[in-house]
Image 1 (cartoon, helix red, strand yellow):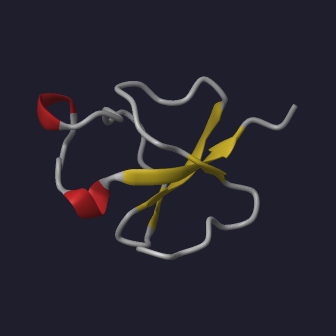
Image 2 (image 1 turned 90 degrees about the vertical axis):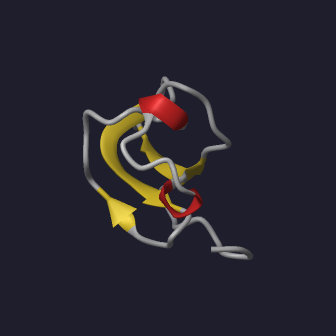
Image 3 (image 1 turned 90 degrees about the horizontal axis):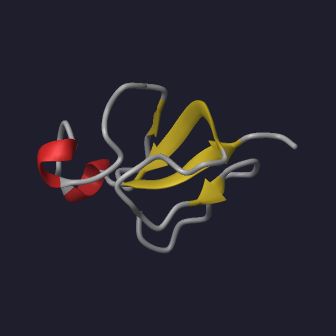
Length: 66
């Protein structure tokens, strides 16, 4: 998804082992360009990730509305 734009209402995410503190539990965008709605999987890579490949890397998420 190189050179892409983050969809409106989503916040870029640059990585980490845990979900962002302000994630609303809603959809997130992966590097493969697809939106996912799955919960319960680790946000990190390696043994903490259900599919630790580059295309499954999360790049944006829906933040909580304040």
